[in-house]
Amino acid sequence: KAGVTQTPRYLIKTRGQQVTLSCSPISGHRSVSWYQQTPGQGLQFLFEYFSETQRNKGNFPGRFSGRQFSNSRSEMNVSTLELGDSALYLCASSFTGARTEAFFGQGTRLTVV
Amino acid sequence: GQQVMQIPQYQHVQEGEDFTTYCNSSTTLSNIQWYKQRPGGHPVFLIQLVKSGEVKKQKRLTFQFGEAKKNSSLHITATQTTDVGTYFCAGPRVYGQNFVFGPGTRLSVLP
Image 1 (cartoon, helix red, strand yellow):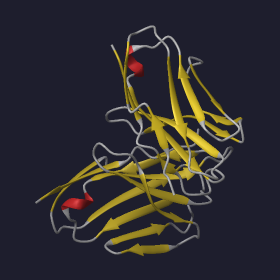
Image 2 (image 1 turned 90 degrees about the vertical axis):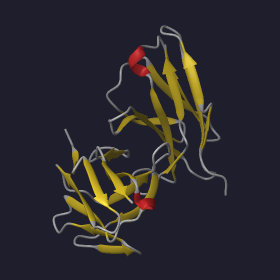
Image 3 (image 1 turned 135 degrees about the horizontal axis):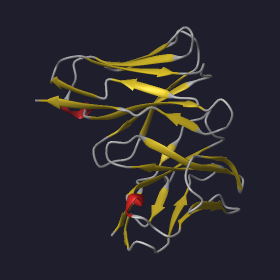
Image 4 (image 1 turned 135 degrees about the vertical axis):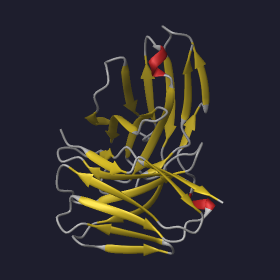
């Protein structure tokens, strides 16, 4: 079966702009989580969606938002980009959440200049 | 807040040597998972442990879940260059459905 698909793979944006990242989970998976990974840092949890509802949220400013559609596809939006937002953004899908295996997409590499 | 720690942060080994990374949680975990991320890649699920004291093996990899379900370890016997990467442990948040990931242990294997 197809894996988790994230688009775009690479993105370069200017400080102050906004960006939308997309994640298509594995068919049948209803939980989608987003993580930020920066060099030397671990996986920082952004938020998790389950059946179109945000179920959990990490400690990120309100500039980071997301949503999930009825087909479980998810989008993540970052407004008013800052240089520090440059990172690899990873999406992970799982059947129900943290008690089941998570499948990660290849990520979107965002560079803010 | 709930924390998951891993030691060491980095480990350099000669090919053929053994390697162990340790994971410690500030809270009791219902389960623990391990992931591997190759350089330039994304995390890939390795295994999930559920029972207290559980030990699971995958070829040269041995995973263990502590009796108190607050710690875990991953041991690799006779490392190979294909083992290079960062190994993360993760456990479910006490109040919530998302994972809490440890900071990872980066393994380098010198040929």
